[in-house]
Amino acid sequence: MRNSFNLLTFFLVCYPVVTASTLVFNVIDYGAVGNGLADDTNAFAKAWEETCASSSSPTMKVPSDSTFLVQPLRFIGPCKSRSLTLQIDGNLVAPAHPSTWKCDANLCHQWLYFHRVDGLTLRGRGTIDGRGHKWWQNKHLNRPTVMEISNADNVRVGGGLRFKDSPMMHIVLNGIQSVFVSDVTVEAPAKSPNTDGIHVQDSTNAQIHNCTIGTGDDCIAIVNGASNVRISNIVCGPGHGISIGSLGKNGAEDKVEDVRVSDVVFLGTTNGARIKTWQGGRGYARDIHFERFSFHDTTNPIIIDQFYCDHRHCTTSKSGVEISNVSYRMMVGSSRRERAVVMRCSEAVPCRDIVVADLHIVTAKDTAATCDCANVYGRAQGHLLPKISCLEQI
Image (cartoon, one colour):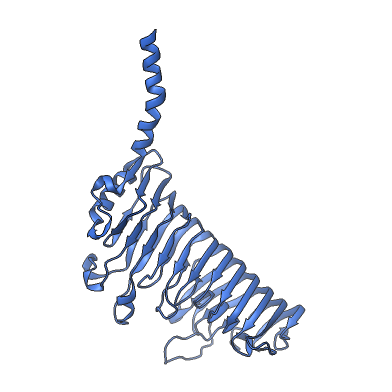
């Protein structure tokens, strides 16, 4: 009887520990050094291979109090488990100089690339450092994104992760059905080129909440194929604001719809709520709603630009991306320029059903601001400072 009791006790006490330990794949156990100098790429690749092969909700662990130098890594699915976690509590750093990056065919598109990994959770208190300074100095280099997640369902990113100094965009969400991003910080200098914080494309049911983002480009960019996007409680700055687009470049047919952005603070940004489209494009940007924004010394707090062009040879066209059913509600703060509201739409494809309600924006010098509109149809209501007299009534 005593032997039976002891055996039962052994299984009750020890079996869960053994089970739990088999579900955690620590990169240290695969040879990672974590001193920020040794190349830990192979250890990460081996740990991922076993994590992806596990069928029991595994966790790949990057432990705290260590810094791991890794070359570009590809985390490829599908994996056996319907849910798996990459717990990043330590720091990841990219190679310090572009010449030391080891990329396929010398083309560096991404540093950390996740593809077809359904049920992926990325979380932790670590920092993911792209060390982009050397990349920014040479505009002719094809610069990589720090992290891209593509072609996946049910993705979660957050838990305190910090991204910094990407050579190009920081987080790209591409082709995802249901993604939740929360409690993420993104940092890069104001003059770092094309360093978007979060870039959403070809994705639906995307939620981004409670993030602090400061970069040299858009804090959040929502581009072609994005729909059912919800964004709230964002601190943005420095950067180019929260942008829909650009859309329609080189005659492309681009579509964005069903976007809600609320409770955003802009700190010294070049733009606040921006929609930007190219002449000659096709498609639409519709059912887009911004509310409860606070601007602090923002150059263009509200801007619609159907003539967006980032090079010298720009032309007008009879075609364009249609912009409709857009609203701006409860907008307050200060504009760096006298023109706080700019809506430039084309005569051939005017903007329709644009609503501005409850607006109070003055200049940074606390003087009256103005608006500038062309070919914009909609209505203005409630408290309006500046007066939106240029908005043509429906």
